[in-house]
Structure formats: structure tokens, C-alpha cells
Length: 244
Image (cartoon, rainbow, N blue to C red; front, side, top):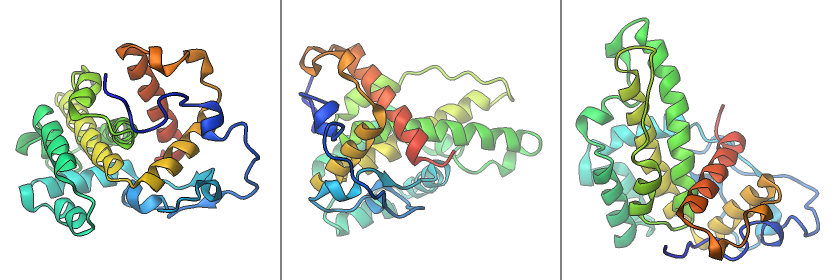
């Protein structure tokens, strides 16, 4: 398995600042940012921001992202990141591969964020499903993207999940579409973070996760261990940084 960009030799404990002097003030990022890039400062002095408080509205972020993707290569997200100098050829290729691998295209995108056509009572149920699924997908994509993982590995871990939902006939399709769109949005948002932002992201998240040394040396982890690690990290990110 390829080596992550984060903290592969000690993804907890001292590298996350748990044994360092506590920071008395809680830093506050943009409380309603549209992406991780907006939420996290680009500052090499990560100590000023641990812990940092911000909340992303995953359902809104993922819905806007899905709508934008329907424009293809002219999507605003690509243009904006390119102008900012953050969209490298590798990131574009990896994100495009993830979009293709998860089959996120017209019919699937139509099930993300807009449920007026479903009518009552299905519309309310779809909104609830979309909120939960987009948050799950976004958080998983974000932690793997912020650790520089490949699109192939993201698909391997989360691209083949089975979605079941009995709220209404298309409930499972809505859950899958919103989860996968969230997975791509989170992955892209994590990948374009700068080195300074990744340090703040992981130091903050690690300070919230508690002692993880029971997992043993990361150098000895197998695929299942890495999958469990990212799922756990994503759950903490969702709890503390996504709107409930």
C-alpha cells in the first residue's frame, strides 16, 4: 500500500499534540465555510489552531458540488481551483477517476440535493436520507483526500458499499448517489489542502480522537486496519466538523 501524506509512523499521541502543552484558547475558523480550504488557515504555526472550531453543511456542499459537476470540465469547481493554482494534473486525474469509478453521472447526480419531483411524502424522507448519506460520504472522502490517498483506494474502501433503505422505493438510490457524490466532494476538498492546512486538519482531528496506540504500529497495518482507521477518523470529523 502506498504511503500516506499524513503521519504514517505515529498517527496519534505526540504527533497530534496530546502530550504537548495545551492551547488555552480555542481557535475559530469560518463557522459556515463552503469547503475545507475555506475552513482551515494556511499557516505553518499549527499550534495556534488546535483545537479549531468550524462546521460544514455537508448536504449543501455536496448538493452544490453535484449540480456544478453537471457542467463537466467547465464546472466552477475546476475553474476556481485552477485559478488558485491548486488543481494539479494529478488531483484532476485522480478526482476524475473517482467520479468515473463511482459512476457519478447524469441520473445519479439528479438524485443529489433536489427532490421536488418526488412529491410528498417522499420528499421529506429523501431530504433526511440525503443529509445522512452526504455527511458519511463527505467525511470519508475528506480524511482520505487529506492523507493523499489514491482514487483507487477510496473506491476499494467505500465504493462498493451496499445501500438499503425502506423509506420509499428509490431510497437506496438516493442514499448511494448522495454518499458517492459526498465521497468525491470530500476527497477533492481534502486533496487540495496545502501542507499547512493538512497539518492543522490532522493535528486538530487527532486531538479529538484520543489515544489510538492500541492499534499498533501503522507500518504493520493491513488493508482492513487502514480502512478501520479512516472510518474512525471520518466519524470523528463528522461529529465535530459537520452540521448534525
